[in-house]
Image (cartoon, rainbow, N blue to C red; front, side, top):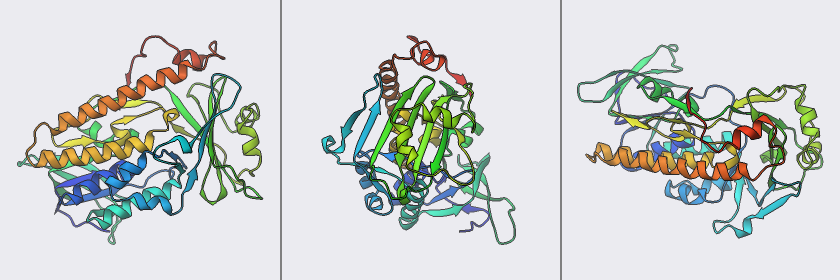
Length: 375
């Protein structure tokens, strides 16, 4: 959908992932005029698991039915962590029921379509860049994306910006916020082709290793995701990935049932913990990974994106309605979520002591909090 130069909105949301779609939906349902700009750049997101607790947030967003279309149930989480034994937590023990193995591109698209149905104006393949503050305290922003007459930038005006651009935190950084990082974790990941005959596995499997840990899960359409999480300074590449996989006890047999893709090898993606030194400022708010990105071991990435997107939308609506404490309350909620994650993060990594002499584990067994550095 094209956007006319000089169009006016109450809120412009940058980023069409779960956080951005959630914030836009909340604001539109509250009667605000919202533009959701989805840049759609770079490789598409790979499959991810969504915990059962997300049902509550999706219900609040009026989007709980999307999980019935194109996603697989996750009936158990298995883990070999702290010992060679493989433990399992069954979804029958979760009061919210089972989780899901997501088709991530489909899930993100479904959330954007739901936002569109609720009155959000959607601009595909469009980036947002703040240009100037307006006399009324709002913003003039540049929108750059496809147009019938070419990709010339055009402008729009709004009262508030929501940064849901992911780990880049593009808008927040342009407004003076700093991204602080805690570690150098990266994901080396590969999507395997469907097995023949199709497999019956419906679980996620996590297995620790001397230089990191492995994750694998089935994906819709019969494919399987493999991911090795390690530090950026660990030697890693297409030539070492198969050997490291072969050394695993539980992940390798699951992967062996699937053919490797005919083209393309493992890809790297950032997976480090990070957060902004301020999640809001004059006229802007951050949500999702732009506000706080967590170690994937928590399996809370999409859940946190939905929660912070929903709460950011509510806070912006309240602030535009005159509540000058709404942003500070939102910041406290993000800080509380992050503090809980860090406690659980330390406890979980502390439970694995078999390779305490290896750099990856030594870094995570420190008794003091590592210094956070600007990205």
